[in-house]
Structure formats: C-alpha cells, structure tokens
Length: 224
Image (cartoon, helix red, strand yellow):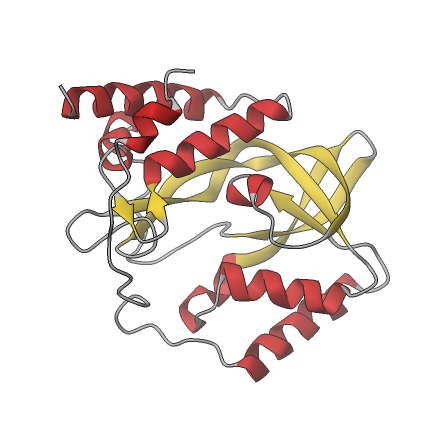
C-alpha cells in the first residue's frame, strides 16, 4: 500500500468548522424521529441490515449484532460529492464517496441491534444526512451474500444535483484528495482508512487501490 500514515499526516492541518453548507436546513429532532420511524416501519419484522462501503466500515456509529461480506451489483464507489465543509474547505474542495450506478461494489453489511432498532436508525440518520437537502440520499437496495440476497439500507446512493462531480478521471480525483482537508480531517485520511479496512475484510477495490497509489504520488510531489 503506497499511501502510508506518514504521508497522510502531511495532509492534516487545522481548519475552522464553518458549520453547514450555506443554504442548508438542518432536520429538527421531530423530523429525524419521523424519518427513523419511516425506515423502521419499512423494514417491518425483518432484521435491519445496513450496507457499508466507506466510512461506515471503520466507523459505523451504531451497534451491530453481526456482519457479512456483500456485493451490490449495479453500483460502484465514486468520489463524486463536492464538500466545502467536513473534509474540505472553501479554499480547497473536498470529495466524499457515494455509490453511483453501474458495476459492482463489494462491501460489508451489518445487522443492526434489534433491541433498540428505532434508536439505532435515528443515530445513523443524524450522522449521515442531518439536513433536508440530503434526505433523498437514503434508499433500499438488494445485495448478494453467502446467504443469498438481502435487502439493505444504504446511504449516499444515486446522488443527484449540482453537488455532483460525476465520472471524474482518477487522476483528477487524486489531485483533489491529496490536497483537501477540513475540520474532520483530510480526504487522504478518509481514503487511507477505507482502503485499509476493506483490506481487513479481504476486499480490494481496483479503483481505490489505484487511487491510493496516485494520492501517495501527489502528496510526495507536494512535499518535495
């Protein structure tokens, strides 16, 4: 793996927390409660599984009872969501990973703890969407596992709108990821953690592996 903790450390710098993106409207607690109840009802009596393909793999922020490897056919990982907050700044655009149509995405599904499932869903929604503008970024998809097909909840699948930079060449993505940093850390750090933890599950995403090589090369060039 070319991207190392030492190289990632070179991309970290202090950045002020500027709050939400301009014009965004935060969901109120009652609205989050209602959304959580909606997804809980849609799940019905079945176990709730969540598909993790990025940061939810290494920082799930909910309690799970088991996990399985899974493949989402018809979807692929893509650094396509523009960020001027979180891991980006007004001076240096960042990119967040989402799922776009086409291909195949190998990841991990987690079965959410059943005892307090509604509360677990609310925690996920508060972390992952939080704003009215992100409500359409949650959907149900079916993944393939060793146990057969399983219906799962997934975040940031099929994003649309002016925030999307779709199908950027990997070299252009690497240029951005090597430079972007915000109050939550750098984009290189996000990529590093994703690739590292996918490898722990025996998953090697071809594009992410090539991307980490390119980002490592960019960081070295910036610090020569």
